[in-house]
Length: 220
Image (cartoon, rainbow, N blue to C red; front, top):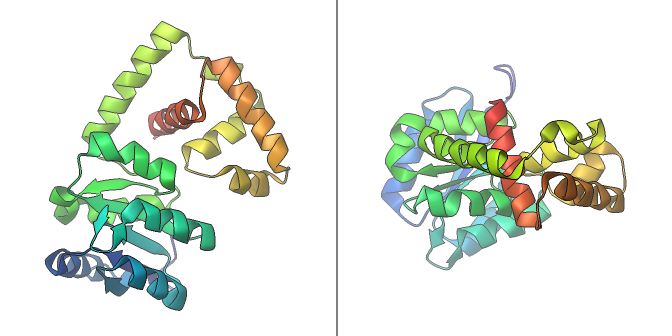
């Protein structure tokens, strides 16, 4: 997170309910290191505001009047790779959290929990961690434990470089982002992904992302 001597972290709020936007502004602007720089309820306007203000974090609802929050994340993530995204929605976390993270978000928070946890969620995202509720963490870890015992998942079988790739996948990084961070080619990362899947007994990219996410949550 930025130090107190830096400018506040700039946050764009995208939600089609004005009362929710106002509530988020009050909570966020109450923290000296955080600032809502702009807000909107529109998919289209969110793209314009992101380009104009270059926020550090975008808080996005799943459902907007003129579009879908996950589609917005995909588009902005492609245009602004350094931008971080947090989904804030009334949608069921067990159904949408993983989907949001696979899309490029760094976390999911239910609107019922924003008064208590929104600042924590933002700080966790800024620290490079995934944020989901404690209930969701326990559910995911329970699933992970069951899978490990039944399928023999063995993270220790991964080479150091495969573990690097696996960790970055669990943090929501794309193949291109991993390649850039590790200074290797995209093809090399794809090769590592296939080896990881084979070693962990995974059959698809979505299973790999889920497994990496669970492992990342276990470490925190």
